[in-house]
Length: 77
Image (cartoon, rainbow, N blue to C red; front, side, top):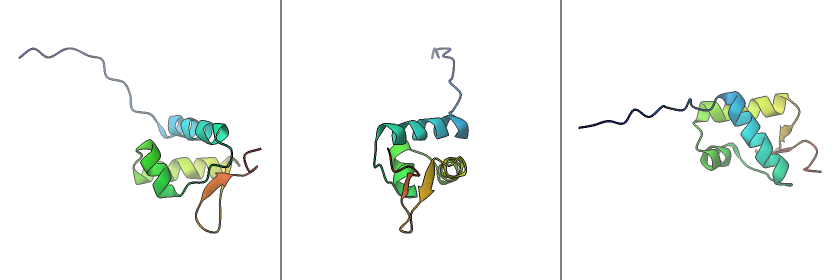
């Protein structure tokens, strides 16, 4: 059996995912998602999802509402 020598791509880092998620929130005003929805939308494991959301909260881009939704601090404006 012949196996092709295909270079593998490195998996996206938490920093990469943070940029991706930030970009989606920036392009979708009013986007509000729960952590499980973020996980499903970007196929993230729970630890990566938590790290991304915490990075976006810590950076002042997202906030968590009283009902568990993650929304932009500026409301998407």
